[in-house]
Length: 403
Image 1 (cartoon, rainbow, N blue to C red):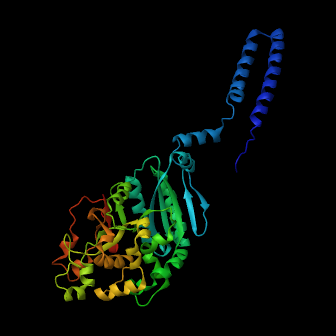
Image 2 (image 1 turned 180 degrees about the vertical axis):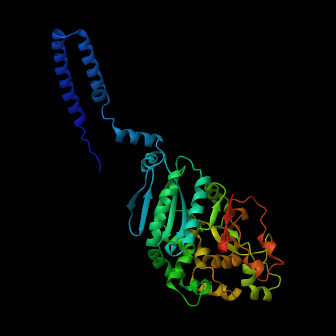
Image 3 (image 1 turned 45 degrees about the horizontal axis):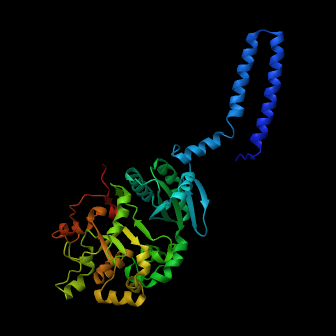
């Protein structure tokens, strides 16, 4: 329930109160003639208090005071309200008054996307989500005119779980943000015609499954997201931040002229194994070899997608054509099962200029599965990372260490 006060009401109240005050003053005069001088003083004191609260305060009330405090930054946390947006998205807003007050000064938006589906059937995903968001909020610092837009791709049950978790976690955020939920079915419908061909080559199982399209979201995100979103970071859930998320956005500034995607190397000999036939036919190739001189492929746990560059790159968009995908897969004898990661790794072998390689500290992967499956002798060549660790990635369900 909201309280609406018409503009003329305070003036009317002031005149009524003033009239009452004058009547009371006349009454006080009569009392002076009948009673002691002390009684008059008490009455006048009471009238002064009355006039202060009802005449001096003007239109100021609890609501206007709260609004003023919010706009000045004095009120930091506001309970979220859920507003529906067009089509399949919804937005969870906190601190709406503060965001609106920034419009005249110019707001810089940062965009972050995470997949958050089937959480009702996999409770462990909720734990990973909480760890990722809690660590991001712990270290996150943005300027007063910057807003972090958190995009989550969800199904309906997962969306409800996400809203519950976010209401708790985001109360302590030190920066401004918006939360946007995207319906997974709607996105899948848009993606399927674009990625159908590559699904047959880079999906788990046999055949093409309609639902598999969502695992290629990053590949075609530039064709789905609104044109006014020029950059976005896509993250896995199984991450733990150890630095300010804003620093990761600053990596976009290091992209080279033809770079469209920032992504770190895979830290296991996954693609040494996957490209085995090509490597046997081309013994001097760098394909599948470890860094720093080799081409070990990519890991999609942390991806910087320059959507505008992806839209403008004729080369990148040519790589999405079904015939181009088939030609490259045939050339490299490639058959994968890791979705967008496989696609990026394959085209990265052919066109490395499309990728800006993130330092391993931005995606320090913990999985050691391939060490125990035939590659123990060379495993550390891929796995070592001597950089400062900024994001820990607990891939293949590897536990992330406590502090």
